[in-house]
Image (cartoon, rainbow, N blue to C red; front, side):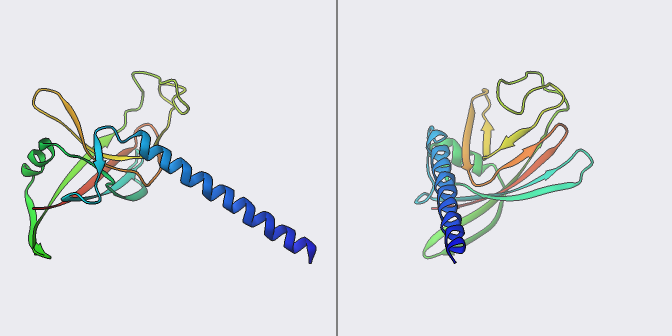
Length: 174
């Protein structure tokens, strides 16, 4: 009986340490990546992305759903959304809503032009990258880059010649 109790105490203690460490790590990432972005909770936006990761043969590796937790509170966000076709309009709780969608493709090259001084980038043609954020970013007409929406709730690894397609859905209220 004593052995069973000790095993249970050890299991609960280990589980608690693991969960606490994971939560602290997530909070650290959220704080350090915020920059100019505000929390999306009470904004006029709701944005989600479905990201599909495929290998070089087109085989499905993973599908990840990301809900944006932060957004850029500048006019460029609405200016970009205004360029997208409206998929659906409606009224909910007295607010006018419109839904837009945008698809983004990213293909990873076989060889890197630069080897980064971080784990995973050890050789130009044999590397991997761990993605932990899904970002909807744009570049304006003069080359200025903006990060409009960011979601942090996943992790996956990409290797040379993998591709990621992100399907963003943005709902904006007035």
